[in-house]
Length: 441
Image 1 (cartoon, rainbow, N blue to C red):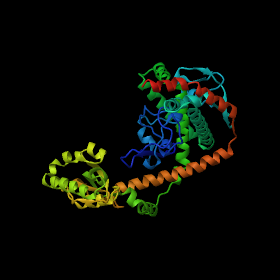
Image 2: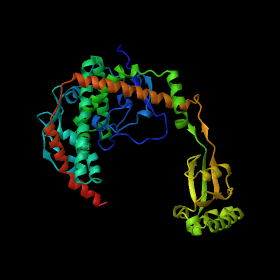
Image 3: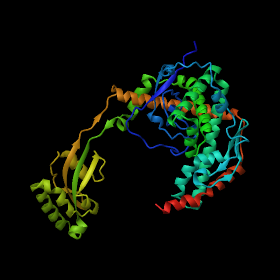
Image 4: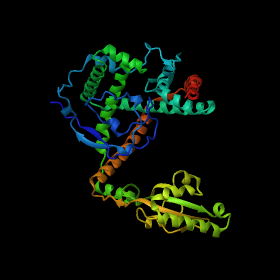
């Protein structure tokens, strides 16, 4: 029997989706996160090739170990590796001499550019691949930036993308060197299964799968090669890094204590309506006149609280006037005017506060609704899941960064600065077309 393969399945610990903190979507590339090193054998027809994965949030990744062979109903042996996988996937030079690289495919401008921007252990990184990956990102930036700022952005993005491909290359090389033959056969099998699912999704025909990929500006064979590299990298980190992740009870308790108020406490909140009587506007600088107006409005508000929104349209604050005086949910102590905050948090829903004297203005407030805050206890299962997820992700990131630096230090890496500049120049050729699209919206 072949040895069991341990693999991790991902679960999101929090419901909030945080803004990604890197280049995301539409073909962008970024450093891989924990879930990118989890071998998945379940159908995933939407999974994208290595250089097109979106940015993930390290703090929303969870790890649970299980045996991937349980999800392989055919129990396919790893001893028999498809010739298709061997021939189409294991090629070490996906854009070799037989392929004439082009630039600007997504924009409709094609320029021959077979230049190599970097070499990693004798493996080339082609300028056209860098630019093809960055096309959606640069197209979006061109709509927002003038010509010179766009050149600066393009230079930065090209440099980042080349570094990402370098990291990817050294990781794949490490996987090839360190994984056993059985591990590599397992990556073959996973790739073959993934490839077949893509064909099935396209209608059951290899030709249809190729046409679908081409319609998206990709090569089907290239996508399969990248998926194989991804599986190899996943298995490498899964075997070499994930077992080293250890989160203790003390670690979790310390994290909770350090972040209790920020992450695990729901503060008291209040929603209210507010009328402002400005001494300068309503009293011409005379506090007495402003106070008389404020007292009159306060008496009307107390007499008919249900009409407060209409009464608030007499506001000396233009924004409050427009919104009927509504101030949406505010945490205790967060409102800018302390006297107002103190008054509304003392009141109950439906009540009109006492007249509030804030020096340069008088205020009348009506409490609309309140939420009583609470602190989630450490013993809460969701709290512990969130903490465990975060700490595992942080440990993984630290370990992986260390391994990346070590691998790059051991690799033979050279960057062709002249070709890097040429790649930026090629990106600039698309600026006018991309920027013109902004004015048409």
